[in-house]
Image 1 (tube, rainbow, N blue to C red):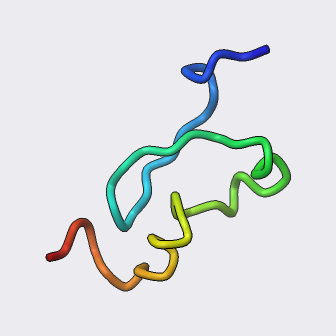
Image 2: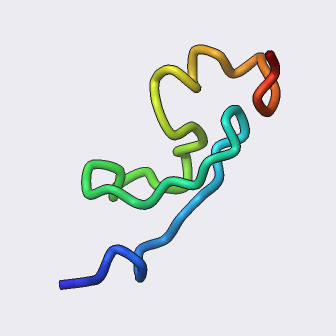
Length: 50
């Protein structure tokens, strides 16, 4: 079993937060860009635009 700190991470281009690998993303980790559905729907917004 791996520690969470050993898992790969990415940074979300919308919110700027880092997110870690999940088992459900194992088959397509390279294609995952956004950390959540909310960020995916707001993909036209840049980093924390208010």
